[in-house]
Image (cartoon, rainbow, N blue to C red; front, side, top):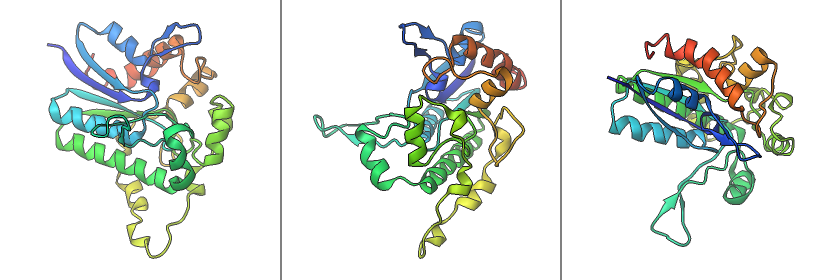
Length: 261
């Protein structure tokens, strides 16, 4: 009997099409290609998805069906998603997963409401909720990230630079927890952030390096440190980089140790 595997993430776990119209497989595509006979893999990774949207997808899918294993690929912490009412059909809402785009439906949010503190605490709450949900449902799981969640560029100025430099993540790293704003009185009793940092089970993450802040490295750090490469296809892994990541990271660190293959 085939094992049921759920994978949820953003574009880093979803194939992309390069500038020549050629499909560039993600690591999930290589997994499905190699083990289609023994694994049923449902991949609900949405390009541009925020961690809030990823959490909500995991919530729905794990409550509607039993899975043998779940792999969550968390996105950058600055992304924002909200179910917005459609002007042409006001009885419907939809998400607009635009990634770290400061324009369009995201413009007012980033201009008037965004804060690094809010991005960090929302991300921690999403992670903790997802871990508690999967634990309560007795579903085994692993978590990976695009990159170290606390060194990805998150201030508005850094996001602008990231967009303008076509994703030169390595030159724009910053320590988020050192730049985070302080909560203002009289709202200090709402500041659960230090407790969330302690409550999250970091053992459920498969990091790509040994450096902790308390998060560790993700896909980008793996590519840079193991291959001395940058993403080659529009700030994403090309199919060869995805294959190497699958073969050298996903397979030996998640699939084999957890008896999935």
